[in-house]
Figure 1 (cartoon, rainbow, N blue to C red):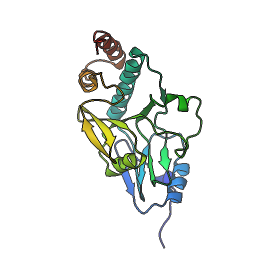
Figure 2 (figure 1 turned 45 degrees about the vertical axis):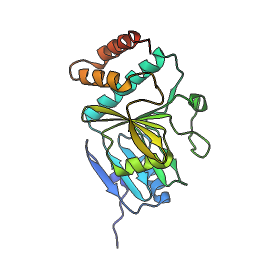
Figure 3 (figure 1 turned 30 degrees about the vertical axis):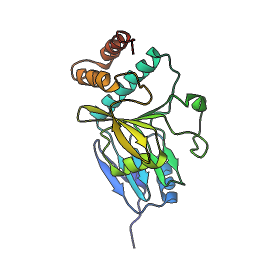
Figure 4 (figure 1 turned 90 degrees about the vertical axis):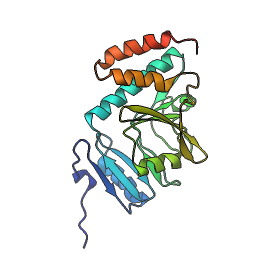
Amino acid sequence: MPVKIAIAQIQLTQGQRVTLENINWQEFEDILEDLGEHRHSLIAYYKGVLEIWMPLPEHERAKVLISNLLVILLEELNLEWESLGSTTFKSKAMQAGIEPDDCFYIKNYQAMIGKTRLDLEVDPVPDLAIEVDFTSITQISAYEALAVPEIWRYKNGELEISLFEDGKYISSTVSTAFPLVPVIEGFSLFLDKSKELPISALRREFRTWLQQRKNW
């Protein structure tokens, strides 16, 4: 007889990842409830495969920096936006679920104002998701199933823009959300500087960098 334990009993340390197979949708929902909302782990689910992982400190710092720089870019362009952070985005119809490191609504920001519950049958997915160390096949498959338009992926010191086209993600040098902004050049520059400067200083320098290039 198989031994059953509560998912909450699985203690992951920073950087660890666990993969569970043959998890049906109801079990996935039960696991989410068991894990609870106040946790540091992230999940990805696609057609029976569930991954749970615990981010490393350097992962979190890179995520915070990218998100901070993105907010400054939005402010400098006078664009409205909403963020749902690492909210669980899930679709029973697509048998997929994902928790991005961060996410932003830009084109569809109005639909998220005051939102307290999310239902992808009626609500849009984020316009842009941020992922650090994004390598898992389950993660990629979940994003493809949910059709998130744009993902900024940061790994091994490099930022890559992935755009959703014809059912899959393709690498791009240009952001759909900011077509006139040299996103990879600018963000990569300040991500590299983050090895020597605090985020507070990087924020100030990035804003100056943007203001000097307002001729996009």
